[in-house]
Image (cartoon, rainbow, N blue to C red):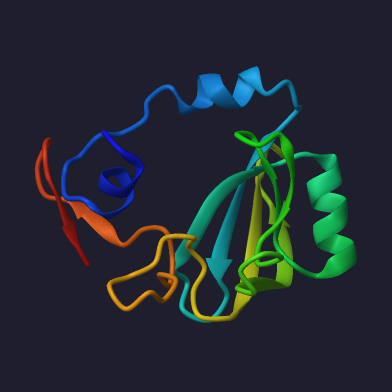
Length: 136
């Protein structure tokens, strides 16, 4: 499946090997979720290492470790669609973090809608059955 169809299509094709790819990048990572502090909408799920967390706390912007590029990723540094941190929460087992954020831009997702505007969050489709997706 090509990249455009994966991000904009209606065929369900989940990447169940994603965690193996994350492990293969060689970094010590934990899940990092960005949630709109006002609406409660989950915008992005990514991964963070110590450098990403330290950078997020210092800069006040949601920061992740890109496991595919194997580099620090301050959300919005390229697109201008920053996620300003309201607070960082840590789960009970201290193995994931929640960035409660205020979006500062057009949207949080790197995928654009039909008008070329960044989608509000990355969860813009729902599973209709085991083969198809529908837009929300």
